[in-house]
Length: 158
Image (cartoon, rainbow, N blue to C red; front, top):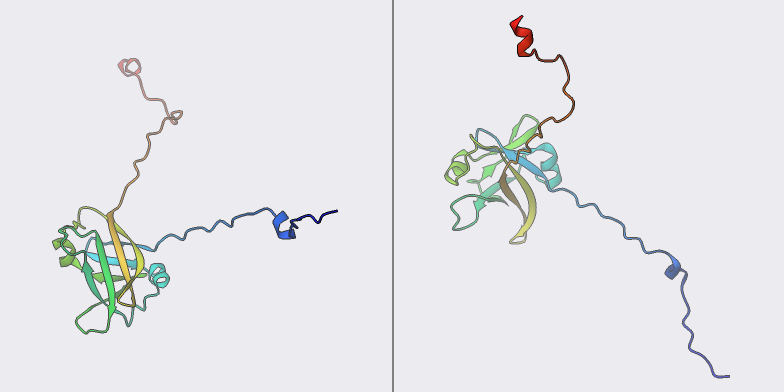
């Protein structure tokens, strides 16, 4: 009898393949206050790994754009750089004049941002994507009316 080519199975091949669902972690967020300050909640500062007491930043935006949509914070050791200030439960970066010149009307509209980390010349830097806050309109109540019934015209004539 001739020898047959036999393919043997491994016990791992009999196990169902289940992909572990990796939940994408939301990017850290913050907002722009009515005074023109970039506000970082303490949780966002911790998640980004920023040392607020010692880190200074160069602040920049996309070249050739009139309206600011992205702000870039690059850590630096220079003396003429922006530093983060402790305010309340979070931290802030005062940029009133830069934001108003960049077309952001922080007095009329509330702006939020999502922060992400990118590589700038071998150092970790931070990109803030600024967008106006979207307010979800509340749907009108369509259920059963509650409370006292309104008076009708007939009742008011008596």
